[in-house]
Image (cartoon, rainbow over all chains, first blue to last red; front, top):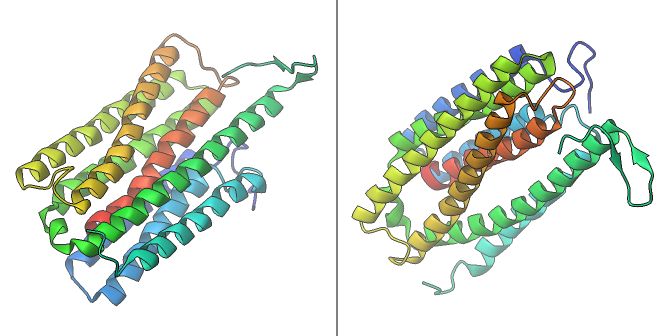
Length: 101
Length: 196
């Protein structure tokens, strides 16, 4: 966790929050535009998922202050996220192919 | 939630900083449990999407893009409200909470519109596994938004009554954690449901 002395002890400053919002808005517009191109799924899916994780990471790091909080808070969040990704991948892979409809 | 001074059962007093730290840690544990809940719902939805790819053609990306912007903006107002409180600007805190409330309610309105549109198109809770998974996932998220709205409204009323100060900020901070987490979940759902 990197701490910047010029920023408030409670997190980032309003200009930083404004910048993050602008980045989130631009990335969202890019996502929607990119999805409309209807590129093959092997390009589309990783690009759009990557952008979604970047956006989510920005909100968690700055708006939820994980960048400025003790590292234990980050671990409490990141470990279940990794477990959740594992649950999604394993469930979808395991059940694909079965006739459960 | 904004106790300046708390006491353990054994009589040991704890500082405000320790109280705030423990409260935030507890909220992060709660968020961790929510991550697992939504992961399970997302897994079921992705499976349903694989089985019924044609069902997602009924979804309207345009209105949902607008509602996504609305929720992102509400998160921006929320974090600015907390920053205003840290500056001691109570009027800006009240304004931020009010705008968050309005935008959150607008998001729920968009969701109600979408549900109406989809049910007319034949996508219902009982139509296919896709419908069940879609409504379960977005419904759980919507319920979180509604609970958040009640909490924001309560915080707004307390802010109007002068409950929060530069020193008594933790109630707004944990509300912000909850609200931003709901935003984070939607960022992922928007991509998984509507874009890929």
